[in-house]
Image 1 (cartoon, rainbow, N blue to C red):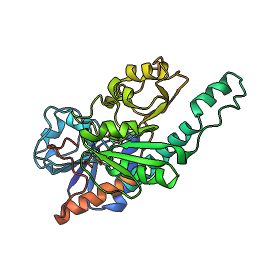
Image 2 (image 1 turned 30 degrees about the horizontal axis):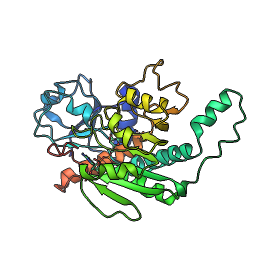
Image 3 (image 1 turned 90 degrees about the vertical axis):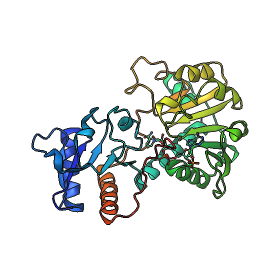
Length: 315
Ligand code: NAP
């Protein structure tokens, strides 16, 4: 540990000071350097905490033992064609990630049952829309695609708020008070039982583009979407068409294939859509530094590492 180097590319120069402040307290023996620091000795770099690392750079550290993603997804690391294949990649998952995502999806689901997009439009138009009385959470079926670290926490919180909750994962499991559907074969059955669809799948070959025309056509007419997974899951034109045809009632969309979403994008001004700028679960540096310290501690003890990306599964 003494003298081991952690190299950070996440949040730029201002954030580096904050990272260093947290690690000085959590792991005083660790040397913490910024990505472009000219004084870094490449031979001492044992750990890299990164978001969108420059392609080819991680291959330059001969003693690199762990790559830690500064974000929940790892697509921004896997995009590097020269990525060392023998170094484990650890996803960033904290209790705060689960809590923030649960807060956000609950907010979005309640906004949908209370017709928030239509109420915002009515307010803008100066209309007193007192016919928009909404529906009850307990009469609303929310289906969560992905029951992993975030999806399972979100499902529990939605239950606690009175919603009827379904979930979909690759493998079957029991989850208290949640109807679990598993695998491709049960997706159709889940969709027909859905008033609000929440996407919390990872980005894999099997899930890319899943929120498209075929899926929207399988939802009951008047269903809504909460998209908080990855931008690549969503066919934006298919969503616009489903909203304009009345097939879908509303959508809350937080993640996009192009970020920032261009100012003139049709989703931004759409009366049935709430757009948020990928903030559903942005976790504090303090919580992320604690998580990194826990992972490095486990690595130093030779203990199993949590949240390791599994290349065979693709997530
Ligand atoms: P995770 O722990 O890897 O869980 C993934 C879940 O998806 C698992 O339940 C898995 O099933 C299921 N799954 C994977 N492939 C599937 C398939 N082909 N068919 C059916 N189910 C499948 O992921 P997580 O940490 O919960 O993250 C979920 C998503 O949230 C990711 O896309 C992440 O990038 C995104 N995210 C967004 C924000 C934001 O601010 N918007 C913040 C953080 C994370 P099994 O359980 O059977 O393996």
